[in-house]
Each structure stands twice: as structure tokens, then as C-alpha cells.
Length: 406
Image 1 (cartoon, helix red, strand yellow):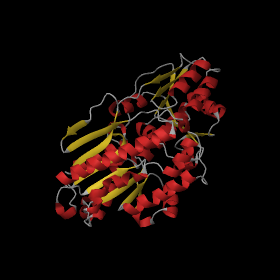
Image 2 (cartoon, helix red, strand yellow):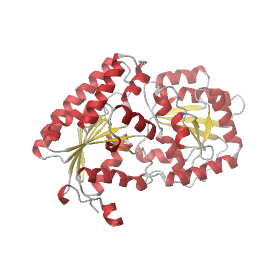
Image 3 (spheres, helix red, strand yellow):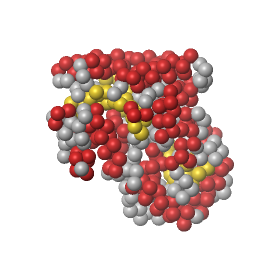
Image 4 (cartoon, helix red, strand yellow):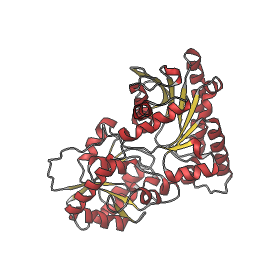
């Protein structure tokens, strides 16, 4: 049933994100939720070299306005591409808004200043949501080695505050970031935590009747430094000194892919570790479900220590036990009954935990069972009402869920 907002009419919404719409779970979930409620949505995003500039579906149009490389390293190149995308988005949103006015523009960072691309809709009455996927000043510190005293960090915190002031509501990706964001940027009543909850229409337990003699570890995700995939490679090589009954499957792309391939060759693990291209959103769950154990090896340095990896939750939703680093954010949400922790950046400790996971079937079964219960209570189908309530509150109308419970 459609939520009755903005005078009871269907809304016309713009989703704006410097990401690939097809693989950005958060953008996809918000869009699909709005479409299910009967609203129309335009998505403005980037594209891969193989994609066209335009796509469409029922009540959906996707404008892929710029190509993006997964290997953005140089800061000036990175910034220029962000600025170019913001300018293109400003022109396109203004043009589309003049043809059919937007009621709501939902902007996903990075960058925060992308909200100003919604200049014309904002000035003519549209509501603006800013979605903080990554807290930008800390991300910049991690990506480019800056300090909190640097001009760039202070400039980013200033832009962060301006962007929050321009927005009607801010969504923040986890509770740790919410506390910091509110303290330095925005009022608590203007900010809501909506995490990257697993989509239980995609991530659910599968029957796995394959009894392979080879134990499979898997990492699916971005190949970047802060994700720590090199730590998993080194740990797996240590494990292989004790057993040849295991393999490590890596799915993804990113700036460290060539470095990882070189490390695998250096360690002589070409036959035991395989790096695959990223698979589609519809296939990733099936790939993950076939593994015996998931590995989330991210570092605990700065940004990564507080950046929540939704892959942990997705493994839980699939009923696959998972090894994660004892970072601040992982300790905040999980305990030893749901995941197996290892010391961050410690390849030997990760190797020991991988060996333990291989050897102890009861441990795997218990972690999988408890993780599954936890994920079912924290799935998108349970939590998406939070988003609907935010949207409805912006137009001062009760949501469908609020009406039903009244």
C-alpha cells in the first residue's frame, strides 16, 4: 500500500549517488521501497564502461551521467571527478525538476556537498535527505593520510556542517558515527541511524548439500587497503603450512587488486587463492552461501575501526559463520556468541581463528544459528519502516505503519 504523504499524492523522488546504482545496496533498497509504495523515482548515478547512459523500469528512470573508475587513488583526480559529477547533477536535476517537480531529493554521500546539486528543488519547496554512508572527514584521513589538524580535515568538517544545515533530515550509517556527527554538526532530532541492513529477500539460508573435502573461506567486497584483504591472504598462507584442505575465494574489484595478485604470487598461493570479478547483486548471496566460513578482515585504523561492514550481517543472514576483527564498531554490535573475533591487523591470529573454525564443527553451527537469529531481527524488511517514517515526517503525515498501529 502506498504511504499517504504530501497531501496524499504520489511523490516524485530523486535519488542522487556517486556510485553504481545496480551494486549500491542502500540506494537500491530505498528506491525499491519507494517504488513499492507507488511513488516515481529518478536515480542519478555513475556508470561502468559497459553501461548505457540511461535505463528505465516501471516508475523508475536511471540517469548514469558519468563514468567512474574503481581505482581512484590520486586525490586531485578524485576531487575533480566529484566536482564534475556534482555540476552535472546540478544541471540534470534542475532540468528534470522544471519538467516535473520533485517532492523529495535523497542524496547519498560521498561527498556531502552533493546535496547542493539539489539547489533548485530545495529553493522551490522540495525536501532534502542527506544519507551519510561514510563520515567524510575520517574517510579522507584514512584514504589520503591526513591529520585532524590539516586544512583539508577542517574544511571537510565545515562542509559537513553546511551540508547538514541545507538538508531537512540526515541519515547516518551507524550509532558511533551518529554520536560524533551530532556533536560537531547537527541536532540529534535531525539525524536518524539507519544501518545497511541485509535484504532478506536476497540473503536467506540456502540448502547446501555439497560435502566438499576442501574447506572454503570467502571474502566478497571492495579490494581497498582499509578492507584488509592482504591480511586475509597472509593469514591463509600461514594456515596452508598446516593443511592443504582449504581454499580462499575473493570476489571484488578495487585499487589494491594488482597488489593482492602480486602478494598471492609472492606467497606461492596461486592454486589456493582465487580473485574473481564482482558478481551481480542477484548472484552474490548464492556465492557466499556456498562457503564454509566468511572472512571480514578489515583494518582497525581510524576510519575502518568505526566503519560497519554489512558483509558480516549478510553472512549471518545466510547462516554462514563469520570471522571478524575486534574493531570498535564490531564490538559495539556483536559478541562472541555471534561471530569469531580476531586481533585486527594480526595475520597469525586470523590464521589461528581460521584453523579453529575448520576444526570445530560445533563452533560453526552455534555461530551460524545465533547469527541467523540476530540478522532476522535486523533485516531490511523489519527496519524499512524507519525510512518510511522519516519521509512521512518531512511532509507532516502519518505513515501507513503508524496508521495501521493507531
